[in-house]
Length: 116
Image (cartoon, rainbow, N blue to C red; front, side, top):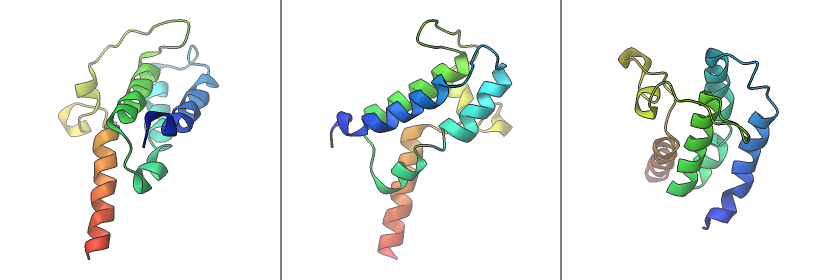
């Protein structure tokens, strides 16, 4: 598989959050949209295909940029580092999963189903 094979997935994510008015959304609104829409969109493909690490990093970059308020014309300021955002809520994070770890979890689940 090549990186260009996953351009449709990245384009769908960019199209989704480019339609939202990021200037009018608060930080908590952007976090909620990222958590329940942007994180879930690539899940179907992650359950069936082992996505490249570079593509997973690009997905994380898009989600991180959306939370920070970055757009094509302006760059947002990150108030909290990505490691803190991806931690569980009980540990002080926001519980947004990393794309690569989620993809590996889905692949292990598929392997377990094949073995059993």
